Length: 442
Image (cartoon, rainbow, N blue to C red; front, side, top):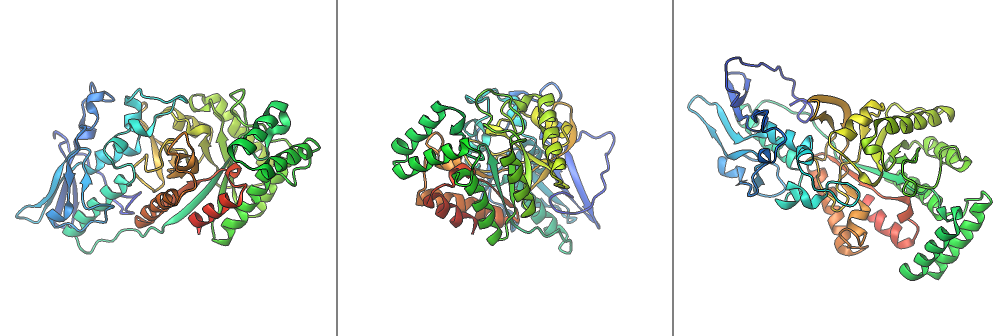
């Protein structure tokens, strides 16, 4: 009511009821919504039997004379049934459990119930109800809000909601601020082999070799990854976007947490450039922090210390987990304990889409402690690797890949939401990379 619609309300708990309905009253009328999911008994809470049934009912709200902003004509129902009716006194009845269904998606309830994980201990898209019920490509919570709003507007035509402006929120996970081959001969050979055999570019191999040799002397002026960060800022400034750069400040895995540290002169210089140009600096929590509150706090403290030493002030500091590793609700509680204001991890690595069912920022919830968190989630809609990389969708820089990415942007903006985009600087080193990216942000 308040977060999504901007409508103030007063909550009343009626005693001696069976909690079968939530009743919204205004003026002389009421709108009743079934309370199904949140009325699940304690002995069934977080059990497989509490999950939605595999074959979800579909509802066309226009059949009930509701005009609703939806992605498709029909909408799947997680809890409840199709239908909206009026009684003889002008009261309305929605058969869809709006509040429980929204809570189910936003809290990531199913991820605490399911034990399915990939090789990085991540809950994969292919195990989600959204993917298996074919609604991962639509923000179902935002659509449920639209259903609720249409029913309320049907009963009370004069009520108003807050206006939400669509945004494109671009970000970059700084896994490698510069080519890290100067750390080992093996790394250099691997990079050169990839340039020649995979990317089929002798010129790129020469660029890698030259950059590595100069990097050994502390000269990163020709490094393509560093130059890509400056290009990211410049290209987004031209279209009015502010970029969030998330930095790895600690190392909880021997090989997967980057090759740099925050005290290097090149990193300090980079941070100053980012801040001077008005962009954002955040935390890229290292590989094993997703279950480790102490390590998360150490890394957050290191980021704050570094910013303070450089005289960089930010009212808000956000985070994103390395490799998008996430454990519900542990990781969110860790980030809150570390003093982070928001997180922007929640997209699936193997598929883009609406993991949380929304393209709007919202406050998170700890399902184990049953308490609201101050940490806000800024759902990640699209990571470039999810679409382009062979290990995921494998679409490369194709026309179909661009159209898919643009469709997510269009859907987010349809609901006045945020198209939150992650693109690594290491994937912006060729003319083809940059031309593709510009088509998406422009």
